[in-house]
Amino acid sequence: MTDDPNDPRGLIREAYRIEGIDAAQCRSIFLDWALRVPEGQDTKDLIAALLERYGAAHPDHPMTGVLRQGLDGMPAPRRRGGWRSRSRSH
Image (cartoon, rainbow, N blue to C red; front, top):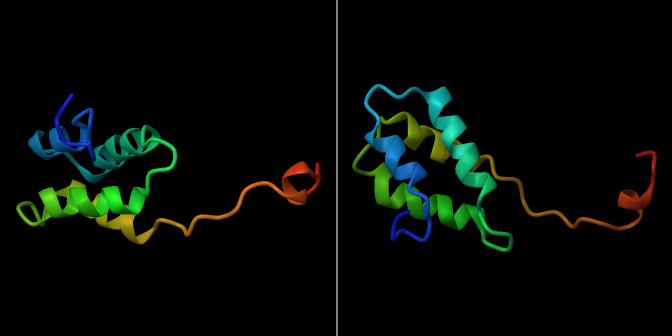
């Protein structure tokens, strides 16, 4: 647990501390972090805050690359529901 509201379990912080960590391991950690983002929070804002906190000091770290990919690759929110969600064949 940390005092960082963007990384309450300290997953991202710890990834930056692991010596020799690779991009695949960082993606796994990122996925674990992303799955625990509370509903209703803007993931893009959280990732941007994490990049601001860690990215500048560690520009070549694999987690910085993963966070950048996460920020660039975040799809726009889509409406869920409607007739397509109730239809058995899409």
